[in-house]
Length: 361
Ligand SMILES: Cc1ncc(COP(=O)(O)O)c(C=O)c1O
Image 1 (tube, rainbow, N blue to C red):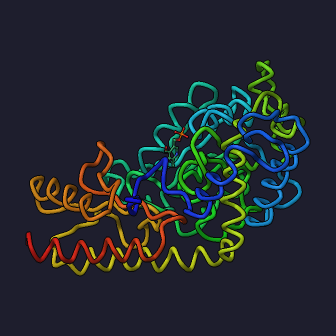
Image 2 (cartoon, rainbow, N blue to C red):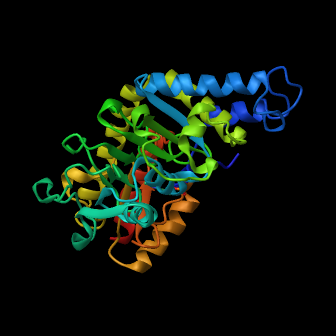
């Protein structure tokens, strides 16, 4: 086995016990005498597996009963477009708060369907922090406010929930779902792709306050109508069954780890360890994000020049630390330290960084 510590931003590392279980039962799942990939989503076994995953997600996130939990295809990007169509009439305003690349992408997909208003943007500061709350131009009576609690590329994370004065808050939690406890009741919608903290790609989740659906006054194709998925337990058409099954195993693993509270404590320690290594390197490593907005999940950092960044990546790879290349929009390095990254993996990276800086500083 040459498995490395995988710092990929997504698709990202999965808990090893989950992968081992998948391997163990890949050919014959439960009593089906077939793979989970080969059985009907409407069969008893899969329906039970799907329901268990929903129940576990509800338990882990303490999701109130007046919220739907949907498991959908199309990733976070499709959902951002579908949510705009489902949550607002065409003449309604949707406010958008931009703190990085993914907020911009969401805006692109929201804007064709509503009157989109950029209420605040950190773009002028190169997305290195959260725009001053006092300056947010929120629209009273807007259909919703969209934001990205954790910006995966820029490494900017909200450490609180913004106050929108009663306007439903729609949050793309693709890259920090279940990384710590969160008060779901403060949101209209929480949604995200599974491929970072929850499971394989191909599956997205949406947690939607029930009263928000069905108010859009549009003639939508039935498959775009989220109420149809809600009424059919996310099986209005064929769901990504394998991804759903793996997500269920990840949730069981999370429960065994102690749930969101335990993950939050672990993730805080991991992030503190890594940022301390960056800040304590005498300027050899740099992270550009304001202290109060640094992400616990995605840590971008830069070396003094490109030559040393190239050497860093090559040597890290050889040392069993992979997936560290920064996003092309930003360059540099990025360590994604999601739930499945053990503290020992972060410590291995920190040790490597210290050693590299001594040799190349
Ligand atoms: C915060 C965030 N939103 C959206 C996306 C896009 O998700 P998808 O590829 O599932 O559409 C990503 C990354 O892939 C992300 O990190």
